[in-house]
Length: 267
Image (cartoon, rainbow, N blue to C red; front, side, top):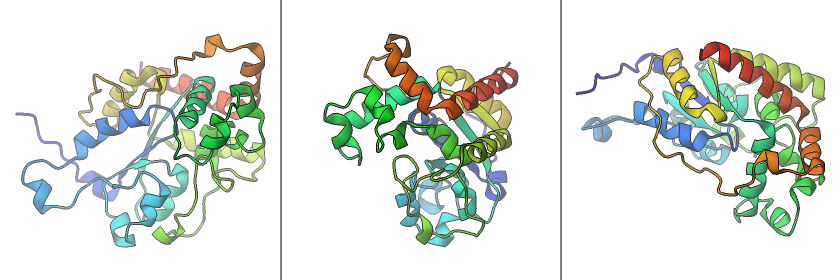
C-alpha cells in the first residue's frame, strides 16, 4: 500500500500551479490532482482540497469563503490569485519556448470555435498575420511575461472581481504597461516561484516539482491536450519567425532565464 502523504501544510500555504496558456498545463494538472485528490470514504465526507475553478469565470462562481479554502489551485490566474487569498501560496509554473508556444496557440484558436478570436484566425489568417494584426497580436505577444509580470491589485479581491480574460482580452494582464516595468516584474516573480519547469522537459519538470515540494508526483504516460498541428519552429519561413520573435522579445528573454534556472535546479 502506498504511503499516505501528509498535505496539512498546504492548508496554511496552498500550492498554486500558475498555468501559462499552451505550455503543457493540461498534462501537469492531472499529475498534481492525483496527489491532492481525496480517496475512499473521504471523498464523500470531507470537502475537496482542489479548487474547481481553472479560469476567472470559475472563480467568479465561487462564494468567497469557499474560494479561500483550498489546498491546491491550478489555472490561468497569473499573479492575481494571491490577491484572492488570505494565505500566501507556494507558486510553481512552466514556461515554453515562445516560438513553439505561439505556433501552438495559433493552431489552437483555429480549431476552437468557442474562443473569441476563432473567427478572425480561422478565416484564412496566416501565422505571420496573427503576430502582426492589431487584434490578434494581443494573444501572441509576450503572453508568458504578461501573465507573470502584469500589475496586480494592491487590495484584497473577492469573487466579484474575477472579471477578465488573462489570455486574449483587451484588458488582460500587462495591458497598457511599459515594457521595462513588465520585464522587471516578470523576472522578479519568476525568481519568486518555488520551482519553474519547462514544457520541453516535462518529465524532468515533474521530478523537479516532486523534489522541491516533497510530493510523490509521477508523469502520465500519455500527455494531454498536445496540439496535433504538426508544425515545428524549424519549418517556419524567415518572415514568420521574425514576426513571432519581434512580438515576443520579453518572452524570449524570460524563457532563457527559466531554462538556465531549470538546468541548475534539475541537475
